[in-house]
Length: 328
Image (cartoon, rainbow, N blue to C red; front, side):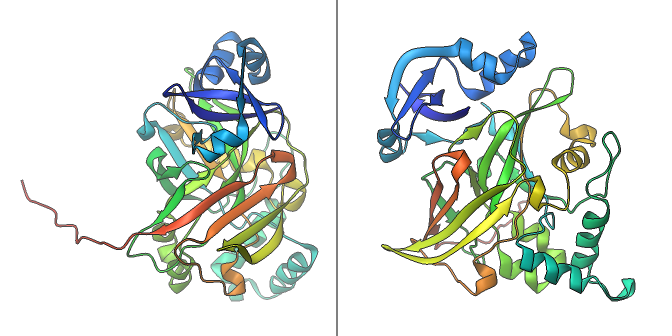
């Protein structure tokens, strides 16, 4: 089952994807449907079945009219936390071999990144019920940093790079009892400033404070262990760069359960009613192939199982203002 969210008659509304051309409207947005399911002790799929209306919408028209929304939103963006984790993916067989080769050195010769990767390979998939290795973790922002599918991704004037990161994103709601509930998964573009990050790893936090996007479709239910997709950068009418990417637990050093545990173990991330968007990392970047993006370039990220690709166009901001803090 796959869902989208769109603007219908001026309000956010969820819809069930029936085909590449048609969606069927539901009687509420995704957040409301998920809250209903939790309260009733039902699955989200059951809540969706009970919310189906007779109204069908033209999916292509929704795209053309830019009426798509992220597939899960909170009515108050301040109550949506966007975070992520890195160094989680093994990548292709060649990349995996190269990574393993680099770990065959003395422990004191490993970089921080390689040490973190090695921890994941050795302990990222623990026995059920046990915590595994702690992954890298970072904060991106609240719901205001999320742009809708098909919308422009803004690049701040001070940014040194504007690079895509094709990822799987987990979408969650915290129940009234403080327990996290996974609503589903979506294609994500975590979008980062890789020049800033590579200058000094202590600037990773700065490099992640950028916009991002996920969707357009929400995968509801169990996730396949192996997922293969395509990431593209399109300039004008031509594909500037294209590369396959792998995700899903079969291609990861960590289990999703372990990554979720190390995020939600913090009590501050279990505030009732909040929405969480958590990016699970990638092994594929156009930046690594020396691609430098510019105004008007379009990112296209697809996973066949997730339906419609996630597409966003770059918009570079030209004005920058020195922030002058006023004393009280």
